[in-house]
Image (cartoon, rainbow, N blue to C red; front, side, top):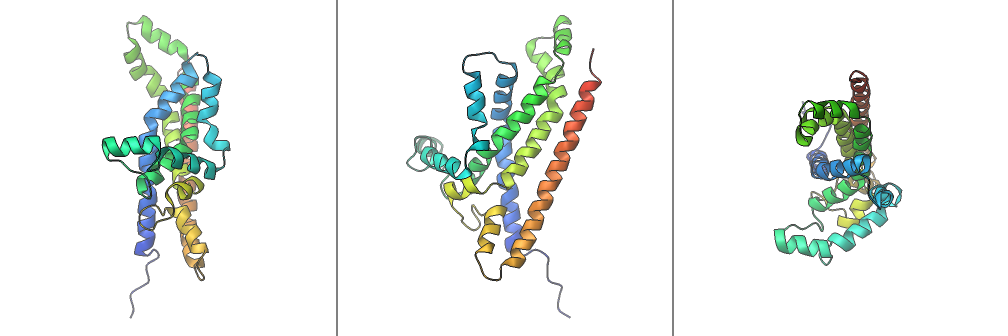
Length: 237
């Protein structure tokens, strides 16, 4: 009796593993930048704030191919940022999974900033003021009041950013191409299978996996957002 055929081939597992790695690195590397930008937009008052807000959210409205082209100009082998990072740190992005992670991070940044910003804006400033009157400094107030209250929103932003990262296609294929085992994440693998006669079974398997991952991320994000809302309701002075 022949052994049962596995649902996923080794190539499928490689694609899934690469997609998860790209998504995790993208959101992990973007989180400090996203939090800093969200803090500036939520709490800062400075000239050019509206312009900064527009630039941060630009990837949401730009065609992803344009975003990928801009990344190619900036972080390609001959781009200013790409040449500096290669010569200084030995870090290259062209035709590598690191480039796919960079493209995913840029596309996920607006969603992460928006979720974190809304969470920071919803923190009751009276609680921060109460902590300051009790002797807590700015750092301690942030660590014990602001960040814990905004944490569900931060986590929701992480989950949304991760879901956006594993679904990124246009910027990735424009910036780092579609290389098996290196930059071929789930969307690129589905696109490649569509070009091959008889690839419908591969498309079906990978599409189901992508849909399940995205659905799980959305459900987790919604749960965290509701928890943040209920948590804020219980902390009003």
